[in-house]
Length: 96
Image (cartoon, rainbow, N blue to C red):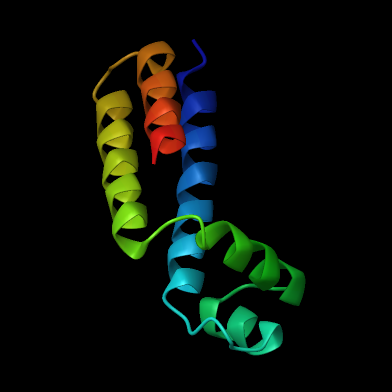
């Protein structure tokens, strides 16, 4: 019943993860305004916040999380229950 809602949440998580990956790939000492432009973000504060969040993960960990998101997306679009897929995904993100 709420599968579409779960896919929207998954899409939001995927968008944030992509932003974190883009920011993580940039030099740490890049000014926030330049970082925001390079990462395709609208605001400097996003670049600062995302940089702080991205520092909690290596690029390898972010790539693994992205792969898990892709798997979750495929599973739900193939009929798997969001009630099973989403908690497993959230647990995997928390474990990284």
